[in-house]
Length: 85
Image 1 (cartoon, rainbow, N blue to C red):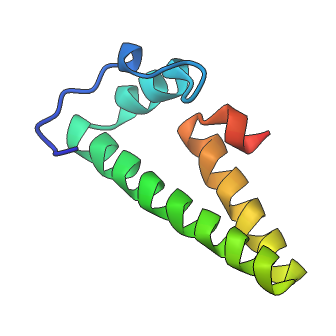
Image 2: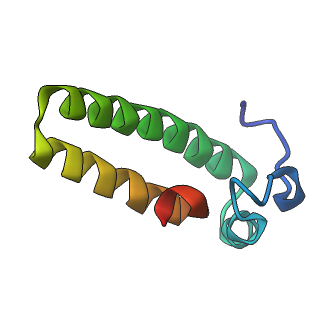
């Protein structure tokens, strides 16, 4: 996604990202910032999922707990409620 992309809350599948959460963000931030937020969320979510898998494979409960909690938190802030619950 690039900063020239025009984002509308209706562009998001409500099963994945709550369109109302994006609409709220768009009320206080410009499109370029929202694009950056989405890109950062995608990268961070992927990294946390890798950490969860690696922690599970190695039996490291503390890292697994931390990565899962972090994924849940960033998902809630982006309106990705299925991942945050």
